[in-house]
Image (cartoon, rainbow over all chains, first blue to last red; front, top):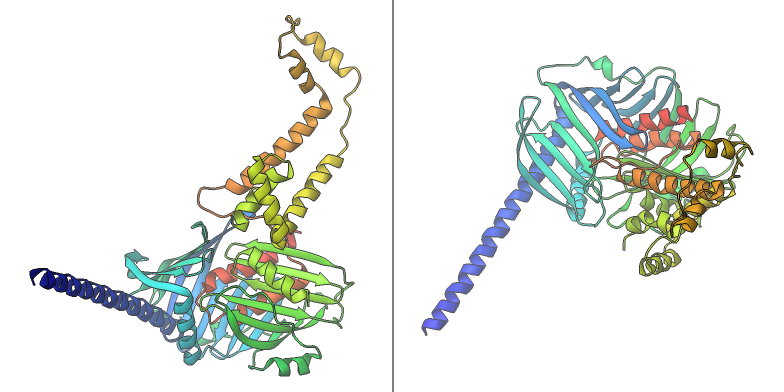
Length: 331
Length: 162
């Protein structure tokens, strides 16, 4: 009888411990998720100005840039990399601008909250999200959030989020072996700033690249382009198809390209696959080539076979992008 | 073994410098994995290029001049035959090439204590314009937008250096 009571006591104790641990995990997970949601809202709703130092490591060594960051409600954002390059959103259009080439790229629309929620669910399916203590950056009290991949070899991300405003104070990305790929740290943060609205306007009269990001089906895209996009037969685990669009680019050298653009995401990162087929106007002669290059946290795989060109861009290891590109080009 | 480990061993594999069991593991992996096979082909091409590099014979009067400045030889030792091989310029050149290749590989593989250093090249002009498209298409993701901008800028700068 005593033994039975003791066994029952042990079972109850174990169940309580497991339940307590699960609740603690749940609390920690929802705290981390709450911080990510706060960060996303700060991106769209906060006014602030900051100076960030960004670095990544590539074959050329460490590359560093001091970046001016401007945010204005609603959904206006500008990242300025010296005089050469800018990446912004005027609330309605996302744009990039290369001042040297006078080449701009546009796409309509800031992100929808519904899409963000869906991405966050996918993120949780592919990454273990947890908070990891407090950290002070640029005089602000932040909380560290770690995104640890469930898939072996995938990048790991550490964020420090301002616990009061949700502004991302720092972000580091590590490769599958724990080596640092890139980092961004805010050196100063001015939450009282109210940047002028005209700052976020896209440049005037540039050469243009224009992805038509109106959501469309693969069939519609095929009708617009005149060829069917070849779905990659090999996709990295955890990634799922996200959107299709037509990408059109009139480059500064006179080459005019139209491409099928397909995006795939695992909630954190995005893989963009471009496929072009002739005619390319003013793009020079075509010769077969393959090229794979990594630049810090991003990589590009480029395959040209005859008149077919496949370009895959994303933050995954080079070998994975290569497999995706080869699986498209092989069809 | 992972592809990364296999690719790290490819330099040694190409020169048959791995232990026999490792040599077999890498060979089996290469049969199955097209990615590593492509990487290995690059190594092989590099070695073939090195192999095909003509060795330049030194001027005929170089060695007598050097020999005249050396101290008189001692009695031949048991190592004499082995050491003599080192005096042949072609072998020395070949050995220096292979050593340089191994050192280069090690440098590339181990450069920096924490940071990744990867082989790279410029991206073709046409491909670089797609990087801007990717930037815009991925702007709603959680990946760091500041670093993504630096990535796009680096692609352009690498092209200009090319």
